[in-house]
Length: 329
Image (cartoon, rainbow, N blue to C red; front, top):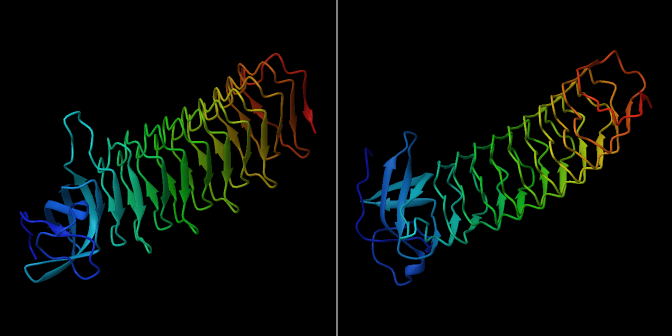
């Protein structure tokens, strides 16, 4: 199969058997003017336009007697006159392994579900950018969320991950300015949280990490401006909190560390502007507290270190003048 040409007639996506060409009765479940192309591994990618507001993508298609598995979702041509997508609901089939960049951006009132047994591995950059998406459960098979994949999804209030998640990377800007997001549990499989990945998620009040978390780095500005966040407990695997990571989390009053913490560095301005933080206890593994780390923490009066702490490098301005006690627990 070299290439499958543009199809003029519709393809039904509801029937359980292999989909085939031909007009069907219910226009709410039709993909029209769909083009399919080899993806280089025996499957095909799809780019479609719809006649109805609800789509159900099937795993396989049959055109001209050839059976093909659909593995990549590339994008949709459903823009209305106002520059927004008219798509309202989509069920993504189990065979899809990649949702390509900008694929489902700019959608109004979008509902996204995934077929049972999803094999989705990657959601690429800008995939859902600025879509009005209220909730999503990301399949456990997903390993990477691309840069800015959900940036500006201001209606997103519920974000969940499938049981046994394999997610390793949440890239930079991934959930930037998702202002309705109230809580999140980072799966234990995640090793990297990208820069400004949750910046200005102003409704975020609950942040947890899965049991046995393997995260090593929280990158610069990851939770900056999360003004409703009141407490955090950082996992023992964490080695570095980068600069401005929790900057201007003005409601933050509790910062805890799991036992046997491996944290070595707290970056510059990491907790600056956390005006409600009154005290903090730092694990013995910490080797360096960088410039301005607690700058603007006007309520901070106690900084304690775990017994057994080694000599620590504390850079200029890291600890504010409001602190009255610096010592061992």
